[in-house]
Image 1 (cartoon, rainbow, N blue to C red):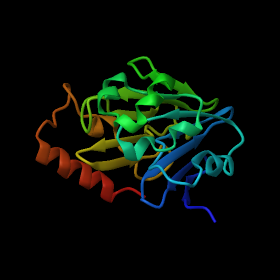
Image 2: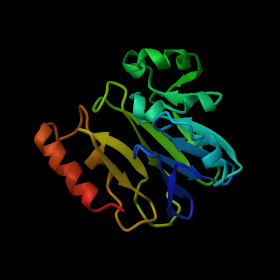
Image 3: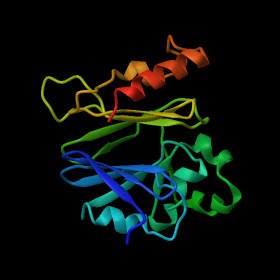
Image 4: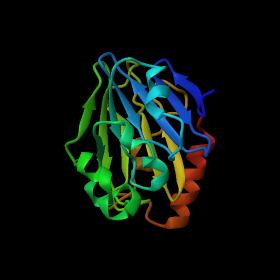
Length: 196
């Protein structure tokens, strides 16, 4: 029996929870799939769980480098993360850094019919990244797919759900009008309440 609980979000994306309730997200495009985060270390294989959902080439990318997001990276040939988070990788996982590919301002993942852009900004960690679908599946819908930590809260928005969130509301940083921590937390909670 698998140690994962899988929930289909829409026709091309899945939420994968492990026993510690650490969440990974799988976005399946026409040609490739993007796995966002690699969960908490356990005896259950994450790659085996992902292969139950797709046989496409899997790209792995991290929202940030905390231990509960990198536990199964050893199952993959390489992964994307911001180099700014190398300093927060715990010693037991430092050996994985030789497989890391830096996420920078030009990083995007072309999955075929879906293009996911990686946006870097300091927040939860120095190298926090959110992922945005810049080519929404539904025509005339200006919504984004994004996954982000904000003050230990997760905000999600999907391009073909009714809970789309404008990226400026969750992309905190230098250009944001939301700089106060309490306001950020309140905004993130508000967004979270509209999610799946």
